[in-house]
Figure 1 (cartoon, helix red, strand yellow):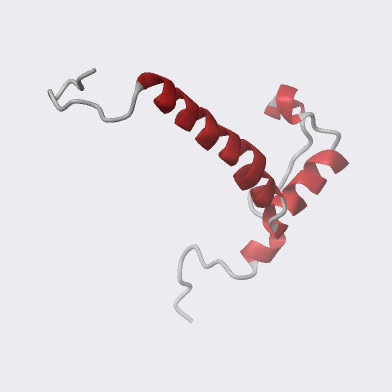
Figure 2: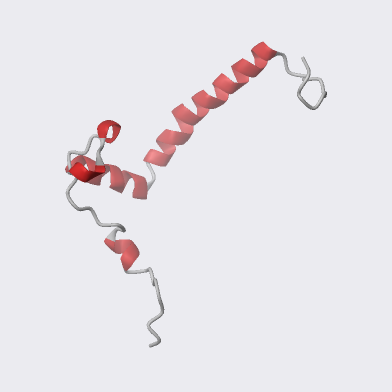
Length: 84
Protein backbone atom coordinates (compact mmCIF):
# COMPACT_ATOMS: atom_id res chain seq x y z
CA UNK A 1 0.00 0.00 0.00
CA UNK A 2 1.32 3.45 -0.85
CA UNK A 3 0.54 6.78 0.67
CA UNK A 4 -0.61 9.73 -1.47
CA UNK A 5 2.99 10.97 -1.39
CA UNK A 6 4.13 7.73 -3.04
CA UNK A 7 6.00 6.52 0.06
CA UNK A 8 5.10 2.90 0.82
CA UNK A 9 3.47 2.32 4.19
CA UNK A 10 5.46 0.04 6.48
CA UNK A 11 2.47 -0.72 8.73
CA UNK A 12 -0.07 -3.21 7.36
CA UNK A 13 -3.71 -1.99 7.29
CA UNK A 14 -4.85 -4.49 9.96
CA UNK A 15 -2.11 -3.41 12.33
CA UNK A 16 -2.94 0.26 11.72
CA UNK A 17 -6.56 -0.45 12.64
CA UNK A 18 -5.40 -2.22 15.79
CA UNK A 19 -3.10 0.66 16.74
CA UNK A 20 -5.82 3.22 16.16
CA UNK A 21 -8.21 1.17 18.30
CA UNK A 22 -5.60 0.82 21.07
CA UNK A 23 -4.92 4.57 21.05
CA UNK A 24 -8.63 5.37 21.17
CA UNK A 25 -9.12 2.88 24.03
CA UNK A 26 -6.19 4.38 25.96
CA UNK A 27 -7.60 7.88 25.61
CA UNK A 28 -11.12 6.73 26.57
CA UNK A 29 -10.10 4.50 29.49
CA UNK A 30 -7.03 6.31 30.88
CA UNK A 31 -6.74 9.94 29.75
CA UNK A 32 -10.38 11.04 30.04
CA UNK A 33 -10.94 9.51 33.51
CA UNK A 34 -7.74 11.17 34.76
CA UNK A 35 -8.98 14.52 33.43
CA UNK A 36 -12.28 13.88 35.22
CA UNK A 37 -10.40 13.53 38.51
CA UNK A 38 -8.74 16.94 38.06
CA UNK A 39 -10.09 19.31 40.76
CA UNK A 40 -11.44 21.95 38.35
CA UNK A 41 -13.22 19.39 36.19
CA UNK A 42 -14.57 17.51 39.20
CA UNK A 43 -15.87 20.81 40.63
CA UNK A 44 -17.64 21.56 37.33
CA UNK A 45 -19.19 18.08 37.26
CA UNK A 46 -20.48 18.56 40.81
CA UNK A 47 -21.95 21.94 39.82
CA UNK A 48 -23.70 20.42 36.81
CA UNK A 49 -25.05 17.58 38.96
CA UNK A 50 -26.27 20.07 41.58
CA UNK A 51 -28.18 21.89 38.82
CA UNK A 52 -29.66 18.57 37.62
CA UNK A 53 -28.08 19.20 34.23
CA UNK A 54 -27.91 16.18 31.97
CA UNK A 55 -24.79 16.81 29.87
CA UNK A 56 -25.90 14.36 27.18
CA UNK A 57 -29.09 16.35 26.59
CA UNK A 58 -28.14 19.79 27.86
CA UNK A 59 -29.81 22.81 26.37
CA UNK A 60 -28.16 25.86 27.83
CA UNK A 61 -31.27 28.02 27.70
CA UNK A 62 -32.97 25.63 30.15
CA UNK A 63 -30.32 26.13 32.82
CA UNK A 64 -30.56 28.77 35.47
CA UNK A 65 -27.91 31.45 35.21
CA UNK A 66 -24.47 30.06 35.83
CA UNK A 67 -21.51 32.37 36.29
CA UNK A 68 -19.32 32.79 33.24
CA UNK A 69 -16.27 32.23 35.41
CA UNK A 70 -16.05 30.72 38.86
CA UNK A 71 -15.52 33.22 41.67
CA UNK A 72 -12.03 31.87 42.40
CA UNK A 73 -10.96 32.90 38.90
CA UNK A 74 -12.54 36.35 39.25
CA UNK A 75 -10.38 37.02 42.31
CA UNK A 76 -7.20 36.39 40.32
CA UNK A 77 -8.20 37.73 36.91
CA UNK A 78 -7.64 41.31 35.76
CA UNK A 79 -9.51 42.05 32.55
CA UNK A 80 -8.41 45.65 32.24
CA UNK A 81 -5.96 47.57 34.41
CA UNK A 82 -7.65 50.25 36.46
CA UNK A 83 -4.59 52.51 36.58
CA UNK A 84 -4.27 52.37 40.38
